[in-house]
Length: 354
Image 1: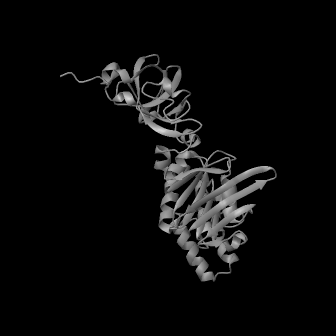
Image 2: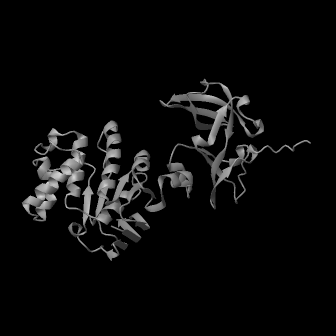
Image 3: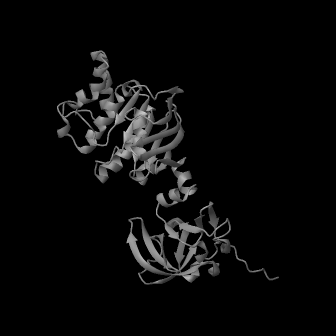
């Protein structure tokens, strides 16, 4: 299903929850709505489902405006955060519920349910009740039930929020594979960056009722278009005046700029590690955090706490140790512009003597 949303608005009393939201989703894509709590993600999802009515704007499925079409006629499957399974029904009957409502033939219901039982890895659990299942198994039942009527659009509201971390990680990969096999257009709400980056084809960053940016996880991380996106995605440090860092001009694109520094923008080591020492800053290691495959290092530079990664293969640093720090690049922004800037001192400015 091709989804088009144009100038969507929604108020709850005096609160403007969704503000002039527009976007397109191609058929078969898996889209993550990512943002802070209260940003408008679930309101957008519920309007797509027909559970809330927009104050203005249009929602189109395959070019047809569906604003006034009831939820049950929109061809949508919805997976809720809390599973919403019927406790008195078995796995089989839960999955079959939507088909029975549509009065599908019994033979078709059985075939479709057994197909989904196998697809979702629930073979052997057909006669169990929800209380006899793990959280991950209950969520799989919820997915199967949503897919049973063969919807054209699958909507998921924080589908893994009620599941513990280990199972959540397993279900992310499972969901991605499931959506690819079924080939259904899907939209899921999450506040978990790792979840969105791992699962989604594209991410829409939603903040204060607006779409801040839409793109692939890599594009959004590498080239954020707004300061909010830059600060929301990934670990980073804000330097209030970019000119406090060697090699950066805080006023190159208008008023004084702030600098956002990601861990991978930074290199840390001793004086012998840098061919151009003049481009580096003096730093002091403040804390180290073991991350399994690497160290996360907190280093103080000019009164700012910067965060970077360090390989386990390199010499282990110690808290209080003096180091040299090279900031390779930074995301700079002010009230007028935002841009990625490379450290201009990385190229040796000294003339070559002949």
